[in-house]
Amino acid sequence: MTLDVIDINSLTKNYEVLIESLLKRVRKMGIEIGTLFLDREFFHTVPISTAYQLNTKFVMAAKSNQKINAILAEHKEKFGYTSTIFKYQFGKGGPTFNIVAVVNPKYDPTKKKVKGNNEYHLFATNLKIISISEFIKIIPEEYRRRWNIETGYRVKNTFKIRTCSKSPVVRTLYFILQCIFFNVLNLLKSGLNITAYELKSATNSDIIQCIKYGYESLQAIPVKIFIKLLMKYNKFRIDVLRSRLSKT
Image 1: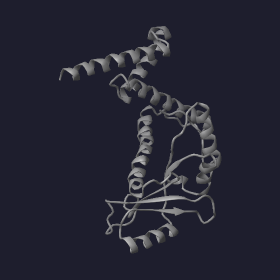
Image 2 (image 1 turned 135 degrees about the horizontal axis):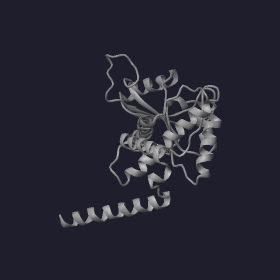
Image 3 (image 1 turned 180 degrees about the horizontal axis):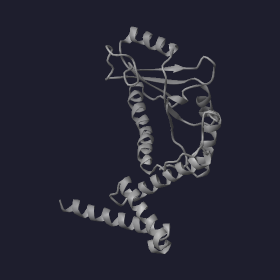
Image 4 (image 1 turned 90 degrees about the horizontal axis):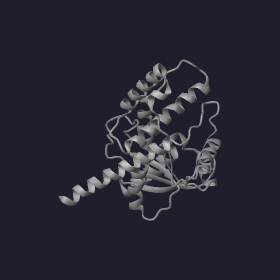
């Protein structure tokens, strides 16, 4: 589910304000954040320092640099080509955190080092280390959750409203509508077998019907009643499935 949208562009890209406002807004909704998953664009001092200041756990993709490459080269000399974890701090200061370097099984040394063909998958995190071996397994799996965001973007694009307007208000509004449709789709999927295209098609039909015959023609029901009916249907479906399983 998409719970919040913040308009940001190259002129307003203040990572400290972005992360702080995002966390505050989400917490106002009564939602507690377990772990913050971020992409590699956030791998620098300000976002990490802000996460520490707000006492927030994070896992983010890390970028390799000269310092990290030197640490990994030293590790390979001592222990061979294996996964590792080491403490790291940016040259400009800030908090110390962990870099998790996981061996990339698909790395091909004969090919150019590009995205997807690096020796290691790098992650930055402030999660507490219990066991190095377990930590190396857990971090990549935890970070996989962030890919749900990428999947969400692809689904949201189904509901994309095209516009030539340069107004940030209009463009943000249209994106919010995409998010609303995305959330409705996820809600419907809890009880129905429906795709994004089917929902979009049904919505288009209802809009046309509403324009032609008026709002009452849709026989709209309140959201509360709809959710209750959906929950009732889900309960019925679960009971049916359980009864089938008990018979087998």
